[in-house]
Image (cartoon, rainbow, N blue to C red):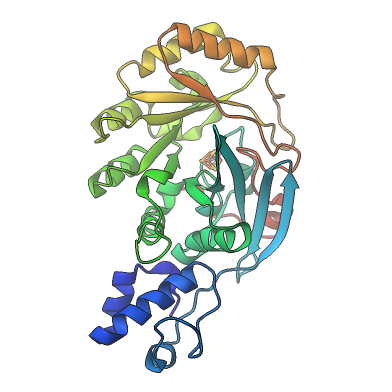
Length: 351
Ligand code: SF4
């Protein structure tokens, strides 16, 4: 039985341990999820023989087959059993004298959403990742990069809302106190703006979980040029879903805005964006565009990034900037996906 896809409670319900077996079972569950070798009878800690013998538990953490280091940032690749590649990125963070790592995980191999600025979109959707493959990225990173991976962001390959059930079950496993024990406030799900998914997430009542929305335009006309989702969910519908979402008092949406030269970086765009977002409790995260392969746009100049942020600021919209890391190794935002491998596989029809 693969523990990567189960919370401890789900595991216990499936195995029905006797009371004296609960504690060693929990210890074994935690060890497996944290990437330690399965404890044997001789291991320290509570480990009665029957727990190890009766239940052949495993954590099928896929091995890391490549690492690409770009400065402080590391992209790693795991190979799935059907020969696909999962890409994840470890990003070191620092605030004052505190240091920790954020892990950017994938929810799909490829993506059906077709955003024009995104490398992953060029793959099409190959398939959804399973719960074990999603949690396995975190378990592998903890094992190989240390326990100071404190934040998990669903901003790698894929649209999390298109794999809703597996992503939400992965969040349950990640936040299980008996296992990896992440605080939900340290997990962010980033969506392209699927209103149906935002409403389903709201229904779960996970008030501490963070939600990010990839907006990237001040109006439908510009957004539809780079994000086909706009034809299904207009920006008005998206804002309505956000306004209904039960945010905590101190919580904000993260609105991601990839700044693309000549497309969405003018002063009038900043003002229109600020106006659109006025009723929404949010911070705009300005992301200087990281050119994908064969990109029709270059990266923006430093001056245009600074200007755009000051226009937002003047209009009363809180904003911050995402530092550019990992461009050289195609590990930055919007640059994940191995096209060479994907070419040998038929992509699924877009959803
Ligand atoms: S930006 Fe996100 S949703 Fe859009 S194609 Fe890329 S991975 Fe998919």
